Image 1 (spheres, rainbow, N blue to C red):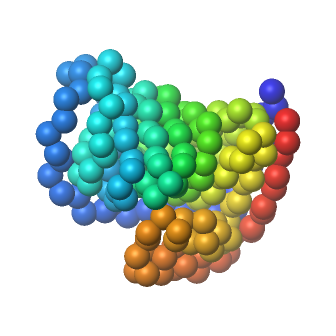
Image 2: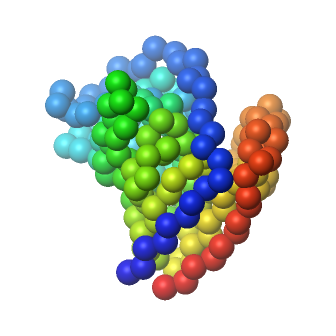
Length: 206
């Protein structure tokens, strides 16, 4: 198992998105809230620890150790408490293994387990801390520091993009899942915002 660390030239964040009232769901009372579903396309489900699988809806709370699974047209964007955001593309599986955030110090830790599919991450407060964001995959473990990355897992192949190219590749990969033209435009705008950062596309095989 290899560990790859990418240092990013940009430390961009995201603005908090407007949220609707969370739908009533049945999750254990002790479950730790880590964020909210800020955008959802059909065929997206979540399984909180100790609870039944539920269909994801906008405004719904996401909890630690929740397993997110999407179908061929499914997609969800999760806005985390530190204002970072992760988009889970079609035919993807992601588990939110760990989330710790101290809003007073703007420090914490995030750990994700991605087993298949496409994922886009835009950093918030926690990602500015060295070693605070990690992604475990079947290929290896990634350590991320900085603004944004896009990850695609195809069998034993891992593709990782960072910098301005993230928005362009994300638009290309995710538009088939039914994103609106405005959403794709937003992704393209992100490329302009990150224009000062470098771009890297790297494939890793076990």
